[in-house]
Length: 193
Image (cartoon, rainbow, N blue to C red; front, side, top):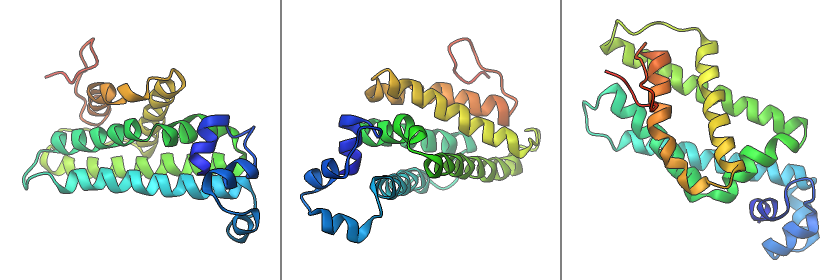
């Protein structure tokens, strides 16, 4: 209910009354679980983030044994983008409203970027076992990839083109491979040879 309410009004205009009306619960029930609207919003975005990570992890688990590093990367990025396209209210709440929701929300965004940076690092370290010519990169490169990905997504969300989120797949795969595999990108944002 809080994600739907934020999508309708934005976080700044959101009231507890909006949340309880959408959830069809009393204010007493709301306050039994949450201190305020920010607490509720952060709980909802945490749950949405967990669901998104589950979808990404599930996509890589469904790959056949022996799938290449690039196939794993592509499956992860595709699952991430498909989740956001399928959950436009969450995408808007997380990528547009979250930065305005206060210091705790900003800390949550930074934590999410670090989570994705660590996932990139784990993928890259595994991939380098099969591709020893791929460069080692500092942690800040993984974080920069996560932040750049978030900004590309944020632009799509702000422009109201969430449903076309999967169109970013080739660009994001190519960008990750450009940094992590030293593979050139072509002008269309696709992985080069």
